Image (cartoon, rainbow, N blue to C red; front, top):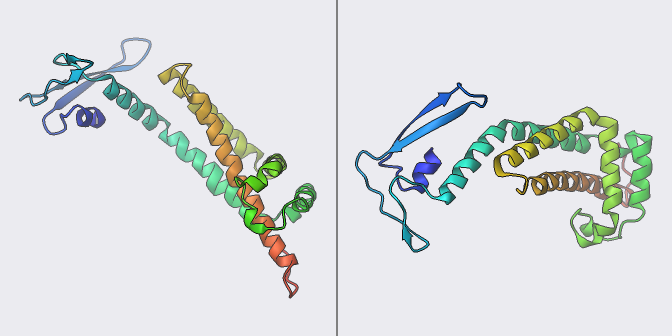
Length: 213
């Protein structure tokens, strides 16, 4: 409602009340808004004056977006917790050489990378030919260490995707949103893997031998 009042120029003059209705199959809310002392100017929409007592489609979309994002906030916080504080942080604390499959994938990929370590970042052009192998290594790491957590992440992502479709329709950008979230995950994991490879490269090329964890 704050979004609605702000966009309709009633933040300082409008009052609203609401009632939750439980008397149908779908719980819903009726909202009433009033200006005790009218201050809004009639807006010109497509050459016509806006009728009194109406709000714009732009405001309706903003209100719907606010509702959807509020409903999904808890899921998003949980998803961030899984990806950033568990899986990504876990990758940064677990060396690939601690597991034979990851060690094999690590060495195979490492030997293919260009000599210039400054190019060892997931989205750089020099890494495009290796992204599939990096993603395979990400999937292997998740399967070995975080299979349960990643399954929960995927479940939450599907639920978020379905909520978007329910709110905005089948032709919404829900599929693009889910795809972008997964791409972001593989990018973050890819950079964590490449960071480990940069550190490994510094160690093996160091003049003085160093212990590899």
